[in-house]
Every structure is written in structure tokens, then in C-alpha cells.
Image 1: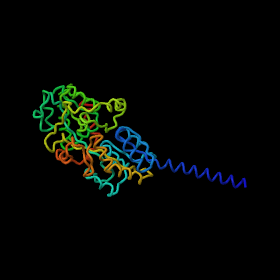
Image 2: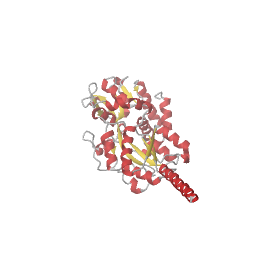
Image 3: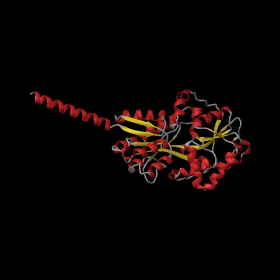
Image 4: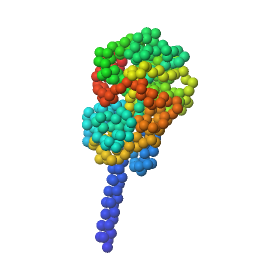
Length: 357
């Protein structure tokens, strides 16, 4: 009898251990280049619906890509949620992302890559922000290529050479024109002694304070200043140290900061996207695809629009009334194959050569 009890006890313990292992294996692991305020809220919503534990590792796109390549097939990551198209292209080039089914990629209305290795999640647009107390929009150039010709702006232009979206713009300039054209533009801009910022939030605050007159940025940084909203991109220690302060800052609808759009089709209005893909090495491919599907749900798309002021990629998703209608914003942007943004190394070399980095 005692022997039977012992055997039964061992069996129960073994099954319990197997159960624990299964539960741990069910955890979905996300490597995110997007910010905590955005991701944590959406992950919580997903966990409530899917009843699946989720763990998120935060970092810049470059940090996470380096980790994925070092970890190889042993990576614990199931999903790579990137802030830039260039990072996603890099992941594709290194065969890190799995091909996704049409039923999933078809949910996005635009910007789906032909290789179907990732899905776009949100859209942002490059703009020239300006201080409306010191600058008249009619005095600004029709094209971003003519911005270096504004000699009266010397020392009054803000830019973020180390920021991913700015680097995406420079890459687009380089691949749509030439390396020499991009170098000339950067060199002429450098001659105007622009003020460099490590991230966009302090730059837009400096613009509001009148420390600079114009700033090359993404549209949502202006909307965030005037209408509130969380940070969308993981910006490392700086973001974490400022997160509380930024989150408590009230909206300032009357702030003298406005958005200027160059002429239709100009690179200065370039549309950029964030996106996510499922890792090839994941043993939870179905769960990873379910999370990607959640990111393209009306709930998640609406949340990104209202909380981060980024544009949805799923047709019919409403945006706040203070945002330009998405179709109008898209008409301003040039037609450009975003997969070409994965050619980032030559851009970084160029920025270093001209002294911008």
C-alpha cells in the first residue's frame, strides 16, 4: 500500500512539474523598440483577452537587433516590435522573421512589404515644426532640399541626427537622389550651425521657448505638445528619466508651435511606419501571429491614434479631430518603397563624415 502511495505521489509531482513547464513555455516574449507607455497598455489589453502571460524586453531597435543576432536560434523572443522600417528590413536580411499569412497582412490597408515578413502597425509623417511667433509659414521653402538656403535661420534650426526617423529621412534622400546630393544637403545644413538634440521632446520644448525657430521632427511631437499623448518610441535612459515629468506636463493648445508641410510629394513630408514581425526561431508562432493580429485590431489601432497621436494603418479607424485626415497626409508624402530604408549603414557613415554624428 505504501509503495502504491509513493508511486502515486511521484506521478503527481511529475505531472505538476510538467504543468509548470508548460505554463512557462506559454509566455509570449516581445522585444520592443516602442515605448513603455504605449506597449504596456496594449499588452495588458491583450493579456486580458488572450489569457496569456506576456514579457516585454525594451531597447532601441539597434540594441534589440544586436541581441537577436547574438541569441540566434536560442532567442526567447517570439515577436520583434520595431520603431523603424529600417530595423525590420535588417531583421529580414538576417532571416530573423517568419513569413506571415495573407489573412494577417491583408488587414493593413497600406505599407505591407512584398516579402510579408512583418506588418505595419502605425504611420507617422515628417514635418517642419515652426514657432508661429517668429516665423511666417509663407516664408518657408516649398521643398526640404531648399531649407539650407535660408541663411537667416543660422543657429535657429533644430534637428536630431541620432534619431531613427531623421536617419530614415536621410536614407530616403540618399537612395532617391544620390549619395552626393545627400552629402551636399547635409553639408549645407551643417553650415547653418543647427542645434542638435538627442531626442525630439526637448527640441520641441526649445522651439516653444523660442530658443530655435524651426525643427525637423515627426508630426506627433507637435500634437503631443498641444493635445497630450504618450511617447511612442523607446529612447533609453533619457526617456525613463523624463517619463514622469513628461507624462505630467499639461497640454498647451495655445503653444506657439505649428506644423509646416512642404509641397505635395516632397521628401520633407515622408510617411514612415512602425511594424512588427514573428521570429523564425519562436516555438510559439501561432501565439505570435495572434498578437500581431491584435495590433491590427480596431481597439489597438484606435488606442495608438488617441494615445500616441500616430496614424492607424487599418482603413476606417477613426483619428482625433485635431489630426489631419490620413488620406490628406498621405497625399503630401512621396511614393517611396519603405523596404529601401534597410540600407542604413551608408547613411550613418555619411552623417559621421559631415560631422552630424
